[in-house]
Length: 231
Image (cartoon, rainbow, N blue to C red; front, top):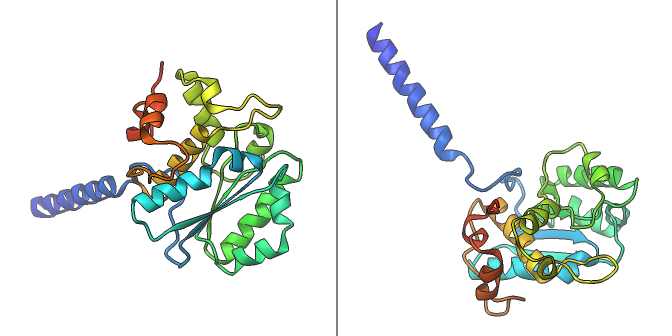
């Protein structure tokens, strides 16, 4: 009995250690599916995708890491989730498995939760990952109506950084919609990268919208930890 108890103790200890070791360090969303062979990440949204240059930042991070992955960022003015769920050509591309992961912005209208459900169903057919990625001015009530925990809260991350002392003028344009600036785009790209690959970005290429010296002066330790310093 003592031998059996000792063996069981070793097995349980090894199992607990294995679970601990394998626990994602940075990832909070579902991982990339091994059943989807695409290497293209898709970001869908409105003008916030364009003004923030989130796709350009993510491409720079991937290039700096010499990654085999690429990014396609689609920015359509005043687009909502239903803009994309109604796009037959795009939906067919998703169903055909042209993308490995979809990051969806654009929760503004009552139909958007249902639109997201349709896009998610298309993703399921091709084992494509999908996560909500609400931009800074999106409707939190509509976001809460989506029956999914797979979300990267870009909006919340920016708000947390603002609350920690980052200047609003560094994050947002002084226009009617308070569009996100490139610094906010870096934050969004940082979130996507560390969640997809469970590691921090290795830096940026020289053609990135902002250089690392500027970013580090504004965001401090966030760059190297992925965590917002509390004040």
